[in-house]
Length: 270
Image (cartoon, rainbow, N blue to C red; front, side, top):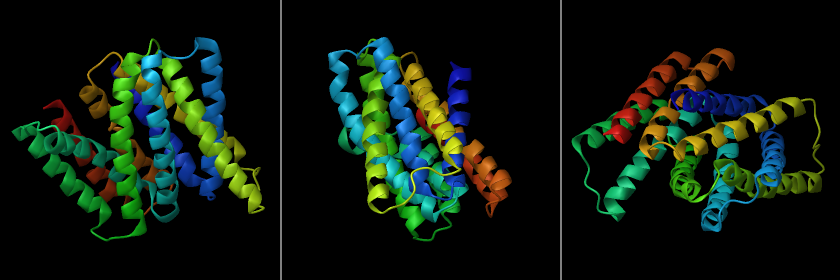
């Protein structure tokens, strides 16, 4: 279980890095989503549809995932990987915990309060306390992540197969977003094929693998444990952003991303 979720973390950070590396964000997300849609359809054909009880969750998650992709796409237009990624990923567990306190009346334990404070401080450092487009889009991405994580965490357990759940989810979400972006680009007479196509296709394959692995783990382990392990991806994203993409403040953001992981672990495991 540990190996699968850590692999998913590395894979998730890697496909985000590929999306950021491709200088045309809409091209990258178009082909990433077309790829996950094709793979999703293949899995639906192979495994069949998930249980009927899971269908409403898949439909809701598809809508949320489309919003998530739009926010993330535009985040990378204005911000660095080592800034956007930890902000978006680190915010989600905080929102889920605070939402449970405000809406469901769950009491906050001292460990959760400590975790929230640690994460908030680290995220403030990454954001550099400047209200930029990248900041607001990253925060919106974090909200979308927290929403689909909760929906899928429940929905996948109602399905007979995480592969069937992931297949239908990505077929719907990836198909809608990928074809939608393609239609817009064609109307704008922008190319839909460039030399960066192999990178985008690789990003799509990694994206599917990363989330399919998480769904598999959510069927078999507590959601909090999976979430804590998954958020180690912010460290990998900071390393890639600072070392490979040559983004500024790489070392500082790496330290902050590591602190985010510590805060997330304290928050969800307490």
